[in-house]
Image (cartoon, rainbow, N blue to C red; front, top):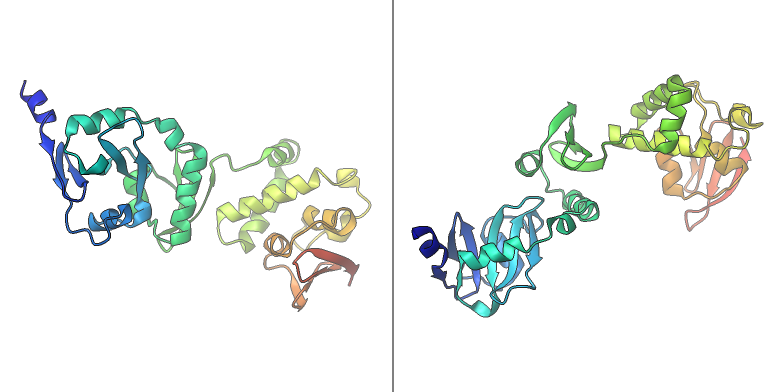
Length: 285
């Protein structure tokens, strides 16, 4: 009986915004701009730390604001500044399709925004996700199936916990030592494990496009001092010449010599890029 009375208690706010504390709706007044972002900052969060959902099925609730990647309700915006009860809020929350709101694509967008703003620190991520430490500055969220990389306590990258793409898995099955050697080399030059694995995945994907694979006529021309073959460079040098400068520099990070602004030497070849950063010429050094 008392529970029902409490749930039906109505709250009012001059701005229409309420802070949620337990089952109490605390009016948020004095908002300078009266906007959702203004409300989020007033209750003590950076704007991208709150995930907002518009409640189209409710005639009393306009917007619900949750601590991002959680179901922890932090604020409510009433429709047309109407009086609302916690029962109204509960009904609106029950109507949320969480699988859609926190789909893989939306989760990636949320994490990327945190990286762009440089404000998803380790403590905050620990408060919203299940994290298991895998290595220095590398954590895994079993729930999301993601690895998350931090630098100086700030999230800088994330990737699927399925480290290897299909081509890397294929090569690992037939030549595990080759993959291990490629990983070892990549870790020497890339900033973190996520980027190192991206390099390896790109190399093995390129290998699958090399005619005759390990019997290719140009293979030895792309063997480096680590004893590995740069399949990525082999493909763009002798076959497709389809490569962007930024991608090239990522794949050869720490291993190229800059001849001029748009020409870079790696091993036996020089790679020249145009003003649009697309590869235009490859020639032997």
